Image (cartoon, rainbow, N blue to C red; front, side, top):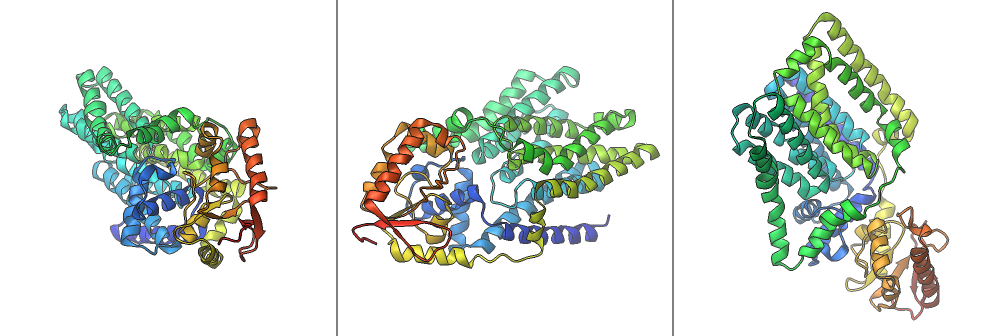
Length: 488
């Protein structure tokens, strides 16, 4: 495939992804990143609203909003598409430098398809995690080939940057250590303990310690450690709510991965792979990142693994094309089979998602809701929205509790502070509440099964009815309440 054709296809892919992202809306998680990122520009500190992710995504959003203050759906879609373009382009470049254009095209194509199916059309952290860790691949290869230690230091730094966007980046360190152990045992007899300490302690450790020192200096170390490491690793519950959707939506990906494994066992393909440590490193990093699925099976959890597994698949399939006529036909058949599985995955999961390629979404109701809310809630007033945090983003208003959305971290906070919602209603700065007592949209699926949490929500409902009254502000599908004394 010629460079012109590759460039043209890449531009068309980015255009399609931009449209797909715009028509998808913000997404639930992304609104938290947007609201907290904007709050940094409004004078709040990072941990005022209990962020559910590592700090990197919030600083990225704050920087973007500083440059584009009036960012809406178009601007955010441009940001998301820029991340998509970087992920696909750098995958192509890194693989192409060592394994040729065919392997690079296949790897980049699988990564691009994964972005469409793994929710990277929303502003999610996983694409940034993979993007930060991707340069660790050539760094590890350089260290293993030259037996020098500084490339491992560099690889560790890149992995540390990935961790700054999401703690799942820690699995990359596990994968890197595992592959180095394998290489030390069967290949170059590297000084195993020295290389591991270089990768983990000196590289990733330095990058991880930089924010620790910063937050220790500003008195926020406890909040940083809790929300970045303790909460996601210790307090976020494991579940299987999305398991069924995972394997219907991503069936094509796992099918292609299994078929690629079958190709890799062929003698001539295996001999090609043994000459390069790239596919082994990519496979190990990808498999290690799949450990995140033991916590949650939402499709975006797969992407940090999928990026590196796509590189492994691209290199293996490319090697099969050059191994023998039979292997070439097998590899081509496997690609066709996986391509046919793509529409099957769409049909099994959500056929309506295809409409995102043929329509232009209308977000005027969202803007109208923001304007209506601002008419009631002044800049120094507060609001409380239960159904969706997009109302905070649209209205540029903030809650008087330290949570933007009502997910697992809110449940944990309410357990430790049962009077939080009562105090929120008593706060005179709170002038507007959006809440439907018949359908409390708390996103923690276990919330109402906890007697303490259900009781706290019941008390909140009673107090809300006693001190607030329903009000129609012209925003359909939402039930609003205003103080009975008429303030606001």
